[in-house]
Image (cartoon, rainbow, N blue to C red; front, top):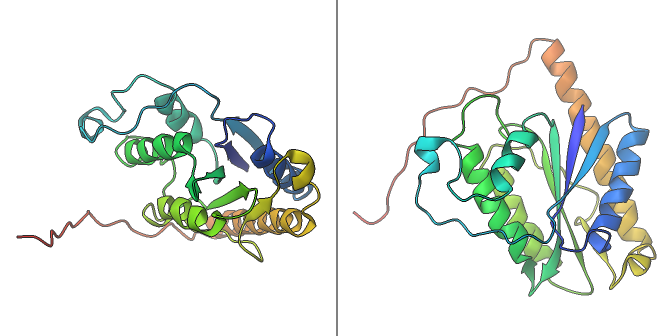
Length: 211
């Protein structure tokens, strides 16, 4: 079992990364493999709402999003981390996940996110954390992903990695989140071995409010 830890910060080894490393360490203690994926600093274009992916099964924009979607198929769970910018998720991860989740829902083959557990973590100097968590959690709830929680909101505080390491409560919650993720994955594996199947998926029904 493997969990993909997504660092949505442009800072490779910054505050968000520090929180993800605490999760990585705890997952390893629980016997769960993980890998940190760096969004990097390359420009990520926003979704054009062209709906070409509905026909192609991939995005027409040529950047790393398509490669990520294919790479993510082999992971069993996901934790997406973002710094707080203007009381919301940073622009890079927002553009990235808008397209990645949209494409994943329209691609063929092994499901990328469907029914796999997901969690969000955020880092901030001071405020905007809960609004950012609400924003990121919506990617999971529209994709039928079980949302994994900690004991408190999944956040750390600090202006630098050194300050994040002083946030003992925040780091503790990262460890609790990691153990909850491991527990869910182990329960799912046990259920599959017992013959319990994922829920049946119905065709999408769309109702417009303006007629």
